[in-house]
Image 1 (cartoon, one colour):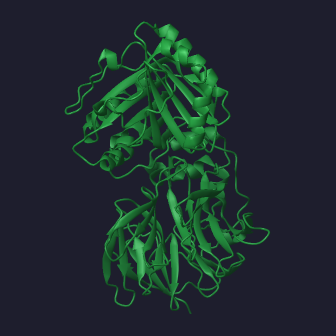
Image 2: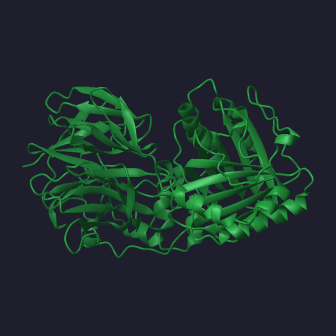
Length: 594
């Protein structure tokens, strides 16, 4: 939402269960519980504000205004929902019942407040907000609802004049209390003398700046506060997550998401189209024959990428979450770990652990010795990683990784191509854990690999059929250049450089008919998207791999329609052999390089 915009909102005060660790309750709230709330229709936005376990009570209120809640009434966080229209709340009633039934897994008490038609208002909405706080306001008994609403506007006007405040939102709750269904084990009591009548959400570059802004705004405002407020409870926010934006979920579905509530994300077609595919795209075979190969069976389906570990064994991820090691000499396999998600791109870390791009869970680190799975990046700028795809690692541990699209789950990846909009990103995680968006507006960002000298990286855009080079040092640092454009097939994962080349899986040949169809009006794309997934024709099967040097020049091109595995997504070279992965297979394809 933009500044100075009014809407209808719902704010739920949440009190975590006390018989479980606080971290466990918070994790459930931002995991399985968020999956339910974010998928309710009629919701424009859904945010979670996780409060700090300590602190609070800092609001500079005059004597007589309560600033510290009772210990058993201390709020652990709030859920903030804005609706698409006055009737938006009614559209999600079916999922609301599931949400209420699920509350007991994390909460001991929930209290719902709703605003009137214009009771929620963004006064200021800026970027680079690093510190937030929520102040819950209780009006004095003798103050009417109208008088309190005028007070809220006056308070907001004073706060808005403070330059340090980058985000400011006010809520005036409806006098009609929302009715909540009875949930076993969850309390909903809300005594009159404990009710709140409004709230203020504040954001700044730091907590110090936030405190300075509030203190300055409230100088000389003591009498007005005393005349209107009975309580002002301030809570510092340690984490804000945006799980629904612009009437669409931002988080990937997981294996725990009930299938009956999953809907295809809305399609908003763009106008981008590819240039005419080169003649090479119409060939079924490469000029150099594709060598005959054999299969290394796997204990599951869907290997998307394949890499070498420190002992030159193969490592791949399977549909369902297992990370598997394969001995290429005898074909023996063993399971190293289970991410409980959908592993895609893999990379070997300098210390021997594995980096896993998981489409459901984000960027993970896996210890192959113990099987321990650790989350490195789950959210970026408060929004979940939607489709973590591939990664490369510098010697010091800096990680470069891609998000194919932030608008579609892997289960609905075709939407990113039908939509024809650039929604992919290239990101960097520094050794201190900070994450930066380096490039955005990429067309299905995919494979990424560092050049042998570490001075640049190559990254693939599957939706644009191209590979670009990003210098990391020198005067051109940070400025990408397309080095392999209008490729005859769509590039997927890029292997680590070996022998001066990186291999790319090319799962789909460019098809002139399909690409012409993609240039039709957006209404056609929307009509297609409304069809069941099985209505989309399967593409022509091909087995195609290409190799590129560090300048993006094609140095090898192998293709056949007759291999044992087709639609290759990942490739790795080992001792004169190629090993190919494909999401449609249950084995790795081994090909000798002659």
